[in-house]
Image (cartoon, rainbow, N blue to C red; front, side):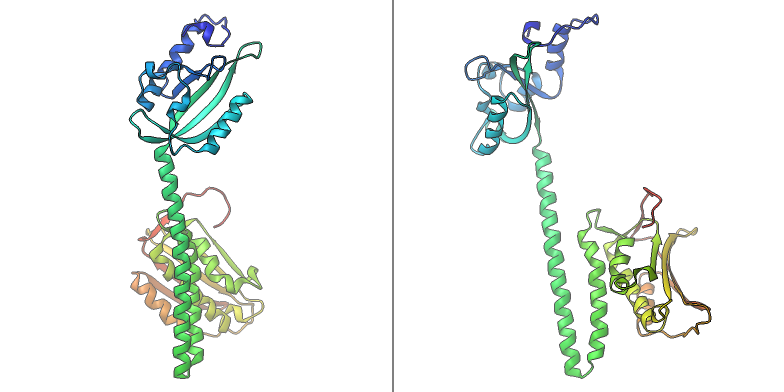
Length: 348
């Protein structure tokens, strides 16, 4: 291609731009073609090596022909209308459309189309750069299907929790112990809330501890959210750890309503966590009762459930009744936990 076909003005920089431009166009790894709208049917007048490799055509098979030769049965007509309008209006446009190689195989083409004008604003050529995005489109489709699957799984799991709760209620009524059913259903609901975040996870099925904690404790924070303070660095939980954390926090909060800090209008709870020096993970639950309040050292059946869960996970549970209320320390193994780097000074 000679310098009179580039549409570019020469610059006084000691470089032969007339030679530099076509060489750069020919050698770039981006597939490129030029068409001449001043000729009948806007034919292709230049293609580089990358364009030949992308389409499988020889240069002689392309020059003088319109780019529609790359279209086929799956090429979207609405997208072609966008291209036709951009050409008519001498506009720049980026689209994705299905094109076809010489051997008939289809590929998704990310096409960047734009006009090239001379120094007087007269249209000389249309420039087209092509990028095979077939693999990228497939990845997008897989991600979309994965999201649909997660939503459907979440819906079905919620239905399953509802069915289990219904069975428990009916069984308890038949046995004449409806209050037992209420306690069990509250625990089922707590596990369900904790897993809501797990169902939405996209990072290797891991979920953030701060969000799990807030979802689990949400019913206890509805009226007085300031009474439960949650803080700690960003820690990711494996899905298998979510039930343990969710149920443990529910039992502690339910016990606090009956016997602890949430039974007093001025009581409050602090939940925090950190990685310990001995490479373990510590979750700390502290209840704060007002001064001169008599601490009642009582726990419901949930305390035993929590202890068994922590023990089964290979962790350790320490409970202490201090002057201002209950303190519970969970020491958990690092399996199923991942520390995330801090991005800001805000708590989780």
